[in-house]
Image 1 (spheres, rainbow, N blue to C red):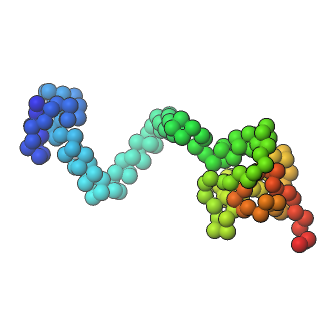
Image 2: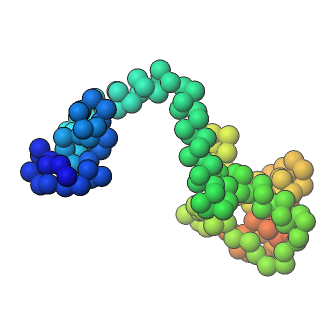
Image 3: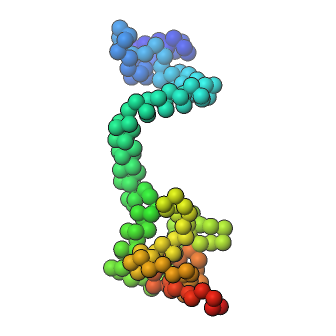
Length: 168
């Protein structure tokens, strides 16, 4: 048992963070008080906190890369699908090549205001149905791609066809 010097409550040792510099190996504030103090400090000093984080990232680029890779892998494992929408689309087109679907396959992520699926690719926003057509037909890029199903969110390559420019 230990007494928190912030709130004055006596708590179990497991309710204090470990701290090697203290005789008993535990901090002087309980976890609850430490968390409240840290949040208040970060809210009051965002510039100092951001500058410190930037310095650490600049000094430890390999650690940053490792941490980001672990986080990405964890997200992939938790969701059961790729983190990046581009990877998701590529995997879906491969799946549709092997098992063609008759019904519409709607884009589950963000859509433009007029209903077309969109994703960020190569530093610009792209329409999903155009990318799906390009992947499925190995790089063929017509000026216009239309939906035979009239569903703007659909990216099933079986429902997409090139439309000649100038014809209506």
